[in-house]
Image (cartoon, rainbow, N blue to C red; front, top):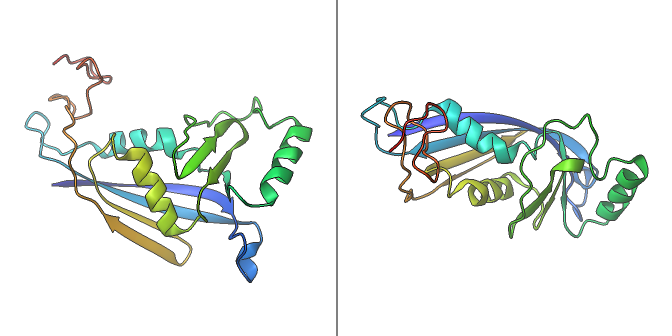
Amino acid sequence: MRSITTLDLQYAHRFYGFKGEAQYLHGHTGVLTIEVEDSVNDGVNMVFPCNEIQKTAWDVLKNFDHALVLREDDPLLPAILDVYDKQGIKNGAPQNQMKGEAFKTGLATAYPDCRLVVTKETMTVEGMIKIVYDLLKDKLNIAKLTFTSGVNAATAEFETKNQIDRCPLCGIALDENGVCPKCGYRK
């Protein structure tokens, strides 16, 4: 069975080296749909609570929301970091309260303090799916990801293989000590 949830993201990016309008920095709104597959938990009669899927995903993906996403070889990147430094926001501002956990993978690096994500490849809907899967594959049994942005859309399906211990009372993942972070159940 599957649980399905969606997240909305607003971000700015450009297609470095692209001929035409997309070479300029521009904003987008994207919708990410996450489908998680697992067995139905007897205690709560559900696969995985959708609000918990959102929380798990949002902890990392909020780095993309209202962020600038640039490819690592984009010549704008050093100039933008210089402006951030001159404005005193490169290392964060007190108003920046929506920071996700910093991450560095082979596909992307998040700098939450300055609301910047640097990617290995150009940010496309297909690229976003690769990044999201890489970030969440060990936290959720992702069966399918769909990302739409404007008129662009992509979908990828994955084989689920994680064995995630879940709380029989509320269905969410137990921590490394076998304790439910929501209700306190102990395995």
